[in-house]
Structure formats: C-alpha cells, structure tokens
Figure (cartoon, rainbow, N blue to C red):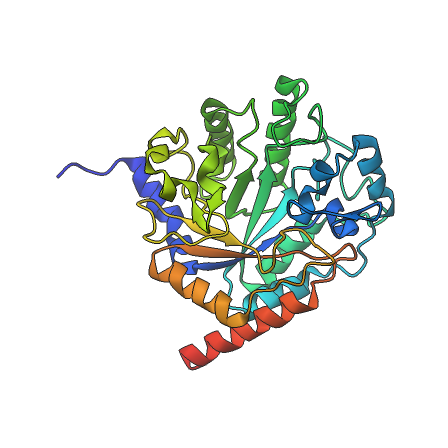
Length: 345
C-alpha cells in the first residue's frame, strides 16, 4: 500500500479536534446589528438583516455614518464564551469582517474599524480570543471576500473597484488576524461568488493562511464554490434537485471542509462538512424576527448532523448594544441542560 502524502498526515492532525468537537457557535455581529433590520423605518423583506446595506441600497457614505454612534457597551466576551460552553459548544467563529466591509477588529490597514471609527474603541476579536482561551474553547474567525466598502455598489455580484489593491488589503488583514490574536483554529471565508474571485486567488489566500498558522482549519469558500450550493428549493439544496450541477463545482478541493448552509444533507458528504444554521431567520440581529426554532428542533438538527458525520455551527446575533437576544440565551441554556441529562452529568 502506498504511503499517504505528508500533507494528508498534516491535515488529519489538524482536523482531529474539529472532528471530535461537533458543535460550535457562530457570531454575526457588526454595524448592521445597530439597525436591527430596519433602515429609515423600512424593514428588510427579502434577506437576513446583515444584508440590509444591499437590500436597501444604502450608499457607502450613509452606511459609514452608523459607526459614529455604534457603542455596544453591553458586549461581554466572557458571557458569550460561558454561554457557548454551557450549551456544549467546543468552538466559536466570529465575524471579523462581513460583506459590509466594516472591520470588527483593530486593523492598521483602515480606520474603518471598530476601534478607530466608533466610540466603543475596543477590539472584540482580542476580547473573544482571550475569553475562549480562559474557558477552554477553540477560537475561529469569519472573513468575507465580498466587500461593499470596496465594490462599485452594495450588490451581491457587484465588482470590486481596483481589485488588485483590494486583494493586497485582504491579504494584509488576514495577516493581521493570524499574527496578532494568538492561535486561530478555524477560518470561515464567505463571498466567493463575487465576480473577480477565482479558484487560483483562493489558493493564494489559503497558502498565505497556512504559512502563518499551519494548523488553521479552512472552509471550502476560500476557493470558488459553485453558487447553487447554498440555494434551497423546497428545503433541499439545488444539487439534490439537479445532480448534474455537482460536477461543475470548481472549488471541490479547496479548504478542509464543506459548508452546507441552513440544511443538513440527507446522506452527508464524502469530505468533512459543517452545517451553519440560524436560530431564527437571520444571521445578524433582526429586531422583529421572532420565528425561533424550538429547543427540540435544534437538538434534532444537532443529532442528525452528528449522526451523518458533520459539525453544527449554530448562530447568535447580538444586538447593537452587544446584548445576546434573550431567546438565544434561553435556547442555548436549554440545549446545554438536555445535553447534560443525556450524558448523565
């Protein structure tokens, strides 16, 4: 039998903890959280609240003004980490930069960040990384390639203006995140559908990240997924309705794991995978979305995910003051109680 390549040995080593963890916390938090899904009295209608800049076509200049009043004084990294641990979660993934382009960490490459542009003047990435270390959780980061602060317009498929300059900026920010905050266990990229992103570009980014932190686990969206993966029809992914689309996935080999969104695949995948899912209908804080999943529903989803060999990354969306929505906290505490009863703790 041929010996496994050395890179496969390294991958198996870095994936070991992740395959055992099974349950993590996703945190969507940014300037959009201050709006709560409402812009000038108009509610978001077609998408989750963090896409409000796109849905309402908010000009960059207007959107940037939100930062001047963004002061989430109730943000408590320790409370979030304790909640994750109480729910039985083993790792955390926080949105360092979402599609709106606002940096939720102290980036030296732009003043459009939470430390320099807001009265808050604190670095949530630093605080969450430290809290995870204190409470025995793995710490991970989300980073969006799509960036409406650099694009021609706040649209899903709008091209980036001066893409070469933007790519330098993106690489620089990733270097900051992977050198200033200690061990980063996972990187969740998003926005690979943007027109200028290619599998080749993704390979460059992946190589940079691994050169800085060899043990970091990276999702498939660092490459170029086939767009319909995250599109659902009648609750099922497009590829289940049209299997021929699977063969057109140019990013099948990118990263370490696949990222089905808002659904659990019926038969799992041949690669490692992680379902990311909301507790209501939005990733970012939506002040009027009360369509919460029940504890029983989430426990069933978690059980299905684990039984099919995947991980579940369950989202919370703190509000503009940094508070965890009461229903999020209540649901997670109940999940933790159920888990403790099942394991006899």
